[in-house]
Length: 98
Image (cartoon, rainbow, N blue to C red; front, side, top):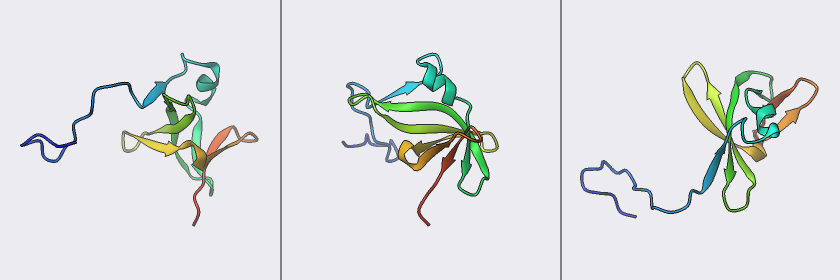
């Protein structure tokens, strides 16, 4: 894909079916249970809450958890495979290899 002159390096999206589907609480009970769930680091520091989920349109598999961060007012994508659910404390834990 090439950018339009004067577009400051922005890449234009191709038309076609979407790659990901945004899922909110009204789509599924499971999504509703995760929406608003706290997300913490492996050390227990709160980093935000689940805003919505992104599902792969082709495979229908969960790919990203979109994390709402109040302080920055931003939404951040976290890959689903980097999270696990701590059922004892009802929260998602984000872990990375150090």
